[in-house]
Amino acid sequence: MTDWLAVDWGTSHLRVWAMSRNGAVLTRRANDAGMGGLTRDGFEPALLDLAGDLLATGETPVVVCGMAGSRQGWAEAKYIATPCTPPGIDRATRVTTTDPRLSVHILPGVKQTSPADVVRGEETQIAGFLALNQKFDGVICLPGTHTKWVHISAGEIVSFRTFMTGEMFALLSQKSVLRHTVAGDGWDAAIFADAVSSGMSNPAELAARLFSIRAEGLLNDLHADQARARLSGLLIGAELAAARPYWLGQHVALIGDDTLCKAYADALGAQGLPVERTDAERMTLEGLKAAYAGLKETTQ
Amino acid sequence: MTDWLAVDWGTSHLRVWAMSRNGAVLTRRANDAGMGGLTRDGFEPALLDLAGDLLATGETPVVVCGMAGSRQGWAEAKYIATPCTPPGIDRATRVTTTDPRLSVHILPGVKQTSPADVVRGEETQIAGFLALNQKFDGVICLPGTHTKWVHISAGEIVSFRTFMTGEMFALLSQKSVLRHTVAGDGWDAAIFADAVSSGMSNPAELAARLFSIRAEGLLNDLHADQARARLSGLLIGAELAAARPYWLGQHVALIGDDTLCKAYADALGAQGLPVERTDAERMTLEGLKAAYAGLKETTQ
Image (cartoon, rainbow over all chains, first blue to last red; front, side):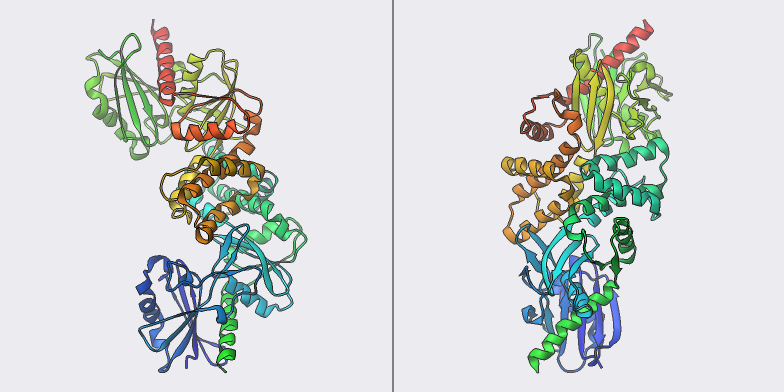
């Protein structure tokens, strides 16, 4: 029987785990009812639609992380300022629901004043990673649409920096003049490594080297796999140049999509850096479990 | 009576000038029948649709520059390799037309082997500028979707470099997470100047500073005008850092959209660089006129 629901509610996805009293996953469900396509009134029906039949007869705690807590989400869960531990259930926003079976807690994101930065969702993955690696001191990199570099010390998020690298790759590969040149989803590891190195050593040239991909397609029949790997490598290389203060001489853990983390691991590995790879979805779930444990402590 | 037609046929526009025997503009017409929306069979009808009634009864020379000469255009006009003078009518591609009144010449673009780069359309603006400034030695910058920096010496295009800055600005301001933060078309000159300086001094940080615009919108209510000026400044600053070998200590002439050229003039002016601004459409027309003059010489 469902003891509580763990919910990861992002811009483009909704994931729900029905959890047993002893912390086991009874059921996992997911759909694309992300925050991006919902108005405020749409969240409760969307959750009931995906997981209503999993609720127990009484009141079921629902612990939510991600964009559902943004200003345009279900209810705003305000950012907690760094330095801070990943925010727990005591900082969560409660939501009044129509269905009396739901007892919703939305976890807040984390903000940084200077440079101005925000994170929402990844803080729960960080909480999960720290729950599993309690002595961890170092850097967590969360590759994605907006890649996060996070400095962790003594269990706290000390500072972080977000790079729009993933979104720039998506826009350039799908919407720009490069879209024909980089078509498909092929890859060339040697070209990628070379482009990372080139992007790191001269990040200013990014906008020119991007156009060169197009020109090499026209003049030298550059293969789409090579073009795509070069585009990715130039962008990640420029990011690594700027993120050097984060990773240099550090222990780096990667949390994110497997394919993307492989690319970051290759790029950082070429810099002689040992990296640790993790299961991103597991980190999210462990973070939500850690938050729920806080709820049990409060109510006991 | 129309002596010849000057045609600027880009990806998203078609411009036609009916020219008199003494080089005066009789009529100017334009629409959005750009190369991007046409198949090969569509070019002749599109030209006749816009300007068919301007043709004389005999055969009318039509001199075309721009993307109509690309591989996906009306007929391919192959790139000429640098170093070269802007290609004249003797390098143009002839097109067989159904309508016997048309005698079409499409001017080629220019290519560079290393770094791989191409230009198509702007070479005619350069020809126009050089026709009006025959002793010019220096650098021409053509801001646009794909900004070109062109080194001119002794009437030749020695080398050039294309930056995707304009397309990146368009994608980031219209399609990315920044689109709400930078909404509108406002401007803040002081923020722009500051962002150019910041982009120049640390271009690697681009992807992170871009996300900071979003974060400052969320945390500090950054005004949309300021956000938009900062986005533009960071991108142009990074470009200026990489283009420094082109502009440092040089005489720079700008050819392009007025608003964009104003931004480049401000950014370069802050570096103590005198810049010359020009009328972009006039440069195109003068370039087409210079090409037509070559045709007259050939046929006389």
